[in-house]
Image 1 (spheres, rainbow, N blue to C red):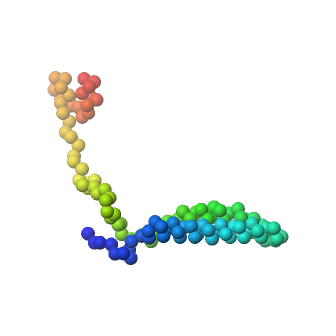
Image 2: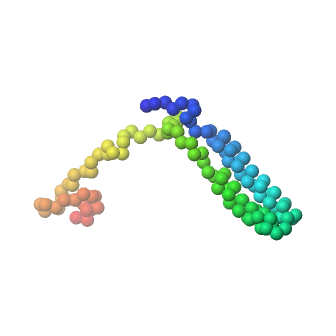
Image 3: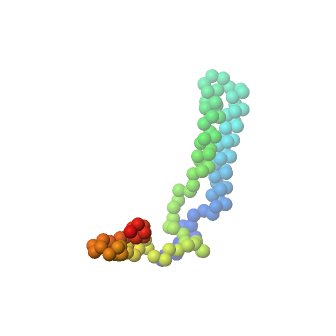
Length: 117
């Protein structure tokens, strides 16, 4: 297995959280500017400021929740659970067993069939 290099690792959770907080703060600062400008502008500038004040919170939340787009190879973390076998190598289902009711040719695959007999 090829070991990932330090440059291919994803950013730390602290770095990612900081970048999301910066994006959110910038968008909400623009919203505050729009709210203040609504007191001083007229005409279509007022409509633009109102639209910015209404739409920017949604955009800020969406931008803040977007994760990083740079995907490197999957990193195996210490202490993680590792599967012991591949899902493709599962054992075959058990063969049907005779139902035990004495009738030849009757077979049962489940315990429920055995209980009902």
